[in-house]
Structure formats: C-alpha cells, structure tokens
Image (tube, rainbow, N blue to C red; front, side, top):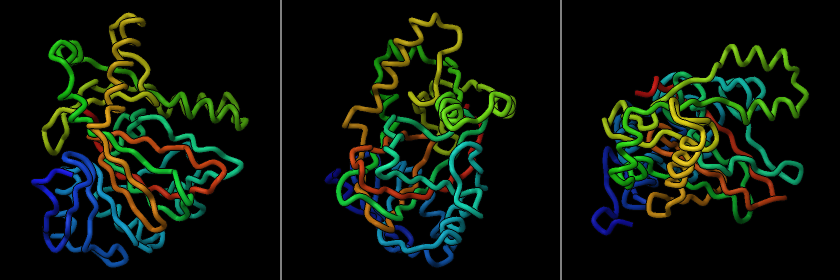
Amino acid sequence: MNQLVRSLVVEDLTILPLTPTIGAEIEGVDLTRPLGEATVSALRRALLDWKVLFFRDQEIDTGQHLAFARCFGELEVHPFAPQKPGYPEVLAITHDEKSRGRENTWHSDVTWRLEPSLGSILRALEVPPVGGDTLFADMYAAYEGLTDEVKARVEGALAVHDFENFRRGMRKRGVSEAEIEAFDKLYPTVEHPVVRTHPETGRKALYVNAAFTRYIVGMEKGESDALLAHLYAQAAIPEYQCRFRWEKNSIAFWDNRASQHYAASDYFPAVRRMERVTVIGDRPA
C-alpha cells in the first residue's frame, strides 16, 4: 500500500487503497439501504480514482443489487450469457464440479458492443474455501508504461472487437447457424481506439484485450498480432495490478473504461457462484 495514502474519509466513507493506483476497499456504506446523492457522488469519485471498489459483508438481495447499480446509470441485458430467472439484467455465473471457470483471460467486459459498459458490479453468493480470486489491472498505468516508440505506433489506431468466444460457446450448445447469423446482424464487429480517452477523467488507457480484440485496422496480420500480444501482456505486469480474495457477500464494482480483470480459475471442483449487473457506457473515443 502507498504509505502516503493509508486511508481516506469522504462523506463518511472510509477508502482503504489496496495498491498505490488500483483497488480500494470501501467501509461505512450499507447497500441494503438507499444511497443519498452525496454518497453516490463520493463512490463515483472513488471509482474514478481507484478503478475498482470492494465492499465486504453486504448481505443484499437482487433488488438491492439492481438499485445500487442504477445509481450509476442504465443497466444492460447481456444477449449471450446466462441470466437469473426473472431478472434479465442479472448474469448468473456459476462454476462447480461440472463447469470449470472460463473467465481466466484478461479482458474488459463487452467491448464487442458499440457502446461497451461503464462498469460491472459483481456479488459473491458462494465462494470456494480457497482460490477463485479476481485480479484487476490499471490500464492507465499500462498505457503510461509503454515506450515512446510503442505509444507512437498506437496513437490514433483502431482495433476490431467481436464476440467470437461467445459464438463458439453457442455452437457448442447447439445454437443454430441461423440464430448465430441473427446475432451477428444485431452485434456486428466494431472498431474502438487502441488507446481510449476516459470520458470522465480525460486520461488515456489501453483499450485492447485478449478476449474480444481481433486485429488492428490497416496493419498486416503479423504486425498486428505481434503488437497486440505486446499490448495484451501489459495487463499481466504485477505493478499495475491488485488482487481481491472473495468472501460471501463481497461486492466488486469496476470501471471497464480504465481497467481489465482476470478471474483465477484455480478452484475446480469447488463451487463459485456469483451474480453480475452491468452499467451501460458510451462509445469509446
């Protein structure tokens, strides 16, 4: 932890940074109760400062989970992932002895959308006795750590994103090619800046990820693949990361515009049961 910032108190919230630049635990907020404007504003500021916020011992129900998320914007419905029955905005993410974790790739959520998410709010319902941590990477730091030569190569560049991983999963589940073609029309491949300017902070962040980015527009395949591999690898640098150990009723709220995450799939065959709600964002620029 940065010795200059052990903790901060803002609007009765205590902010406990996990690392010098990314990740902070929040104390002094009860998510079972409606939040006032000042608290929401303080949490938004903390999210912008720390990229991911963690809350412990929040025994909330689905309605309270949704209400908290709606404090920060409208909610999206994921077209491919499993939903909680009766709650289309809630992703049900369960892994156990029949299903290994598959989220162990550095990524930012739904970058295959024209307007990817502002952020995601993940709630732990059941966790392994050990393992199943989530790692988060500061993509401002990842950009700032690039050499001047690489920064010059990516300045103004665009990359194509799509949902190929979900497409493969749909085929395995027996979804017809006609249905997949319909999804392709609804969600065509999109182009986003390789370096995104955050709409609220104005800071530059790397905005390519191994899960959804396919190639850099206008580059030969070999050049694009090599450059993307280098950019992807930045998220794996420990100095840019924090790591969160889950407990039941823990919550993580991350800024998809400035961070990436990686769910360690080291707990098989134990059970890890989570629910996620995602706040709609804007088109990257």
